[in-house]
Image 1 (cartoon, rainbow, N blue to C red):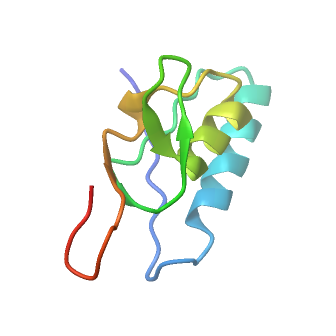
Image 2: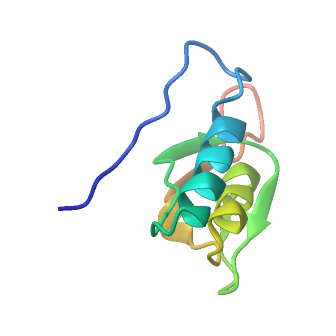
Length: 88
């Protein structure tokens, strides 16, 4: 059985991504196989995966903390705002 852990918060910019990265590193150092995941992200800044796709920078940082290559499946929906009412 695969065990999972969800990090939740009550607001944006509360530190959830940093906590998740820290947990990825701790679990990796403890010998566990760790893969970060965020189903949907809205951000202007992104990171490019080795296969040329984009994910959120926080998920790329979490992948690095987990010792694995970033993959678009870690952040399948990346919304990049381009106006007050639209996004890519």
